[in-house]
Figure (cartoon, rainbow, N blue to C red):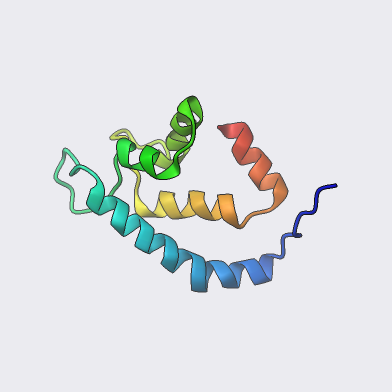
Length: 106
């Protein structure tokens, strides 16, 4: 038997805005400090692939596909704070259908 907590948009939105996004912003800032600088010397903080893969600790091709989702189609292959936060919110606070879609996209 499998028990899943039902998705409640109102409660989850409050949790995401007050707790999860500030927490994820702190994680992103730490990962950005660990990352190699962007080649174009942009002032926008970003995460490189090696740092992201070491953080998520997923096996092989799964981490590559998860990284591809996190880059949000950027040509430079860097992960911005918005795309990082959006992906992690989708992983931790979304409906079962949304999580299944994320898994399929990987």
